[in-house]
Length: 246
Ligand SMILES: Nc1ncnc2c1ncn2[C@@H]1O[C@H](COP(=O)(O)OP(=O)(O)OP(=O)(O)O)[C@@H](O)[C@H]1O
Image (cartoon, rainbow, N blue to C red; front, side, top):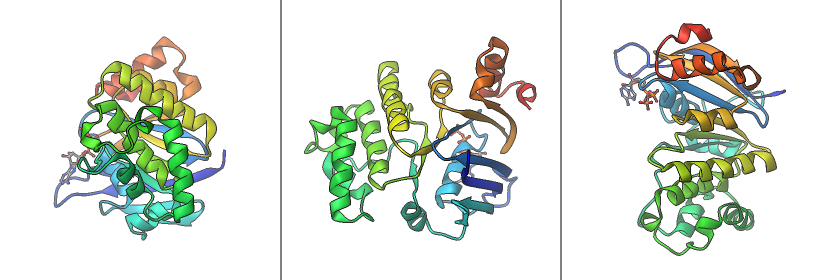
């Protein structure tokens, strides 16, 4: 698999304290789904924000073979690196349609219309509510809107930060079914931070385990078939015994 994104020695330090992310390296292939798993505070969101250009970071980031660390968030979006933040960050007072338009603000109007049609086809739950204020959507619909807004930019890589957060199990399943659909159809890679283990294991090709800002292990999807391997994942998830996965 060719590398779409190569992340080398990524570090994030807030203020004078210990680094929140320390020399993290991994790659994402075209159409690959890579998950980051670790306990609270392990540095998952900091990695995502650093990749999106939202927090200062050191290290080398090569996207389609070209360095992007010096680019602004906006320039990275234009290259195809699009972040869907934890907590959705949709604009509640704007309508569904207006939120989607915001996501495609860098895109030519004709392209934007095409993408809007694609997003609404993908998420029929919100298609029937395009003129409704976003705050009036259910949690699952808001998450679909957040993902849809990300897709409006025409990403090559979607950085998805906890899409299941605050959702009832049925809605989580629906959101992940849609993600699986996007994955099957499109030319899109995903870096996924997710607390829902079952869904992560369904969608991800590979999982990196994080602990105190470092990658301490990696598993490929095919390695997750045995009960023992799944137990390692669960241990890493709980922040315990992650050395098994190293
Ligand atoms: N803006 C910030 N300023 C200072 N420290 C921060 C900031 N954001 C995160 N941190 C610290 O960096 C470390 C990693 O946090 P981060 O949010 O990346 O972890 P996480 O794995 O995403 O956690 P969670 O699962 O709880 O969202 C933590 O110690 C956190 O307190």
